[in-house]
Length: 263
Ligand code: DGL
Image 1 (cartoon, helix red, strand yellow):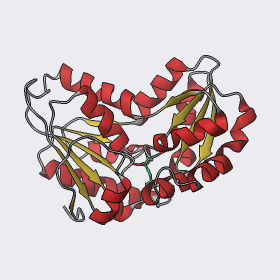
Image 2 (tube, helix red, strand yellow):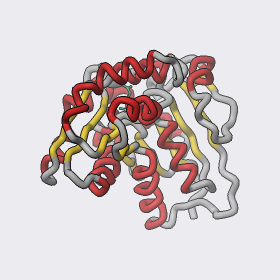
Image 3 (cartoon, protein in one colour):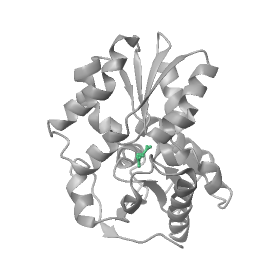
């Protein structure tokens, strides 16, 4: 048994879609979530800037004595090796579990990957899919991040922007759509209006299952009777964070502002 908390982070509130699933399958753990909103978006930054953000948040979480770190952000997960180099606890990426899950559910082997500019450009999803004989259709949808971070999810602008980016996919005969950015599953209702019924694969469940497997194998889960806490921190404005994560229904402590630079 290991009573230390689990650290989870993203550039913003998108990673809460992953934390949500993690809490569902491991309710007895303590969680510390960092929304690095002071540096959001990651997807348009230079690689060295993203690496700096990943290391700063990672070091902050290490100082909080976490037993594992989930990078609940696809863009940041691309640079996981830099964090793994400096810590000796498990660091989990969302990309591999999500991609493997998508390959399992696709029947026609034609899969769309929706992600940030950087994630599409680095093509990790597309290469993993192609290596296994799947057709991959990568679509950069960076504006979805701004929408989720700044608007109400039912704002009519949501459907318009999703339609604009996803119309080129309509005739591609994909049966599976990967939300290759943790913000994107929050726009799934609008995606269904444009693309119809597909397998929409979000990062949450596959990543939560991967984390549980790792903690179970190393006998690092918390006491099964423990009532876990959820602490949420933002490097941006607390008011904005609160406003845009109303959809997150899990109990958590009051959101606090933190600085992570130079930790
Ligand atoms: N939620 C993040 C991801 O999964 C990135 C959003 C961004 O900061 O550009 O890629």
